[in-house]
Amino acid sequence: PTSRNTYKCIFDEDFKYVLLPVSYGIVCVVGLFLNLLALYAFIFRIKTWNASTTYMFNLAVSDTLYVVSLPLLVYYYAMGDNWPFSVGLCKIVRFLFYTNLYCSILFLLCISIHRFLGICFPLKSLQWGHVRYAQRVSVIVWVVTVACQSPVLFFVTTSVKRDTITCHDTSSKDLFGQFVIYSSVMLVLLFCIPFLIIIVCYCLMARRLLQPTRGISRLSRSKKKSVKMIIIVLMVFIVCFLPFHVTRTLYYSFRSWDLSCQTLNAINLAYKVTRPLASTNSCLDPILYFLAGQRFMKFAGSKMPGKPQNEMALGIVPNSHLGTSNDTLRSSAGGTVSETEGFIPGAEGGQDASGPEGFGG
Image 1: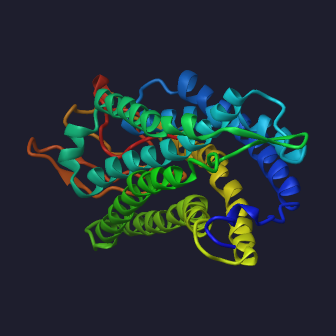
Image 2 (image 1 turned 120 degrees about the vertical axis):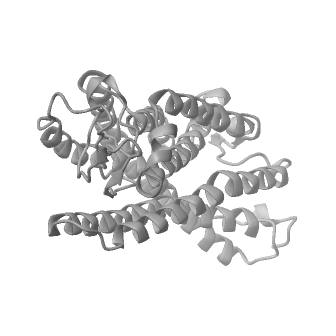
């Protein structure tokens, strides 16, 4: 085909009428249950919030908003790409997908930077890790993401062919070139740059954690576990988000090139397969929240009342995207921030423990 008749290629998409309904159905059921459970834990079980809790709560809200839209897609693909609902609902469903995708990435970025400061610059984390600051950052993330994804509401549309109504995840033929440009800008701003920052933060945290420190051997083992967690969560991030963005970029680019229909079919297949991978993040986040919750119960019950207010434990909890452990910090006031493995919801006396702490719910 040429750039003019690329759209005349007939894609073999029978596989997606099984793959997408099944995968989206599983994500919907599991993700909705776990995220509602996580929200319940955040709202009713966590008495003292901190910066990490704030970011994770917003992440859970984003995941919940996305999974509640999945039944429409399950029905759509199960019916063989036949959209029986309105054009507006088609736009909203696609908008929620991209909003969740990039909200997740940006909140992971917030958590990564927050914990990076707690590990490498503990004193700065006391300044920038307050709950009110995290709340303002969360509002900015939502505003930026919604603003950046609002063009999706313009581009996405439906088309009628015979008796079938298609809810496109891109745009009409006339606007496809503009949509590719828009998607490329979003790729750089909301995926490439945040992902690069997250990798840099994790590498610096890993280097800091691997440095030999004084203390008993248990702390060294704790640091090794934290480094392993960093590797694991990076792999989760790569599996969920990287394949989708790579295959989508190739899919959009190749549709404008002079390529054979066989090549386009292969790229289309890869793109459709990686779309459910991007959705699985909505299930992975709350699962790791609750894994962290086991430590929360252990350490929350061992808090000692009457601690001096200049002594804070910068707790670290692994979640779906981060896992770290603390170095010992001696503050200018002479207090010691002890290395702690687990979640500390807040310092005694009503102060916010503003290190890289947090509970996933």
